[in-house]
Image 1 (cartoon, helix red, strand yellow):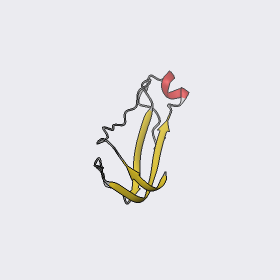
Image 2 (cartoon, helix red, strand yellow; image 1 turned 90 degrees about the vertical axis):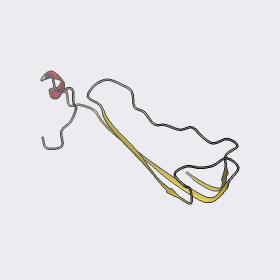
Image 3 (tube, one colour; image 1 turned 30 degrees about the horizontal axis):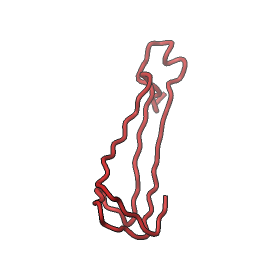
Image 4 (cartoon, helix red, strand yellow; image 1 turned 60 degrees about the horizontal axis):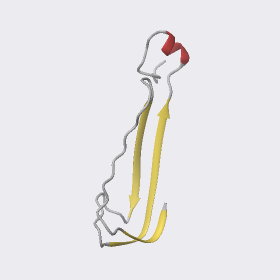
Length: 76
């Protein structure tokens, strides 16, 4: 996301969570330019960029058949 100007009227309350079946592995992260980790209401941020990355892996069918609920393993 990019923005020339960005301003919140209230301090945001944010969180990220993943729900679903066992065996799914997920990870997310964001990279921010000109935006602090915690933004404040009433503050104007300029020339903002946020890159959001989301990774998700599903278990291999053979893992499920063998009772492995942890999902994919990079060393297999």
